[in-house]
Image (cartoon, rainbow, N blue to C red):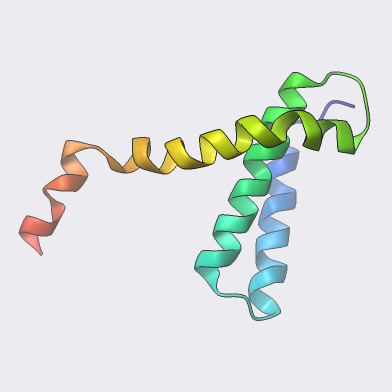
Length: 87
């Protein structure tokens, strides 16, 4: 089962809207949908044949490892570190 990244993104966007509409805070909903998207995207790259649970199983450990490093690598830029000086 091959899942395209654009399909994962569109499903994640719909899930985000549903979670916000039912009352979950936007930050928590975004974090949850982002984590699920990372896990499914990595799992889909590692598993070419199999069902959805194989994708989750193969993407879970690397997805959690990336969930800790991606936010830091995106926010640890010099241009963002000098931003508070201008506020």
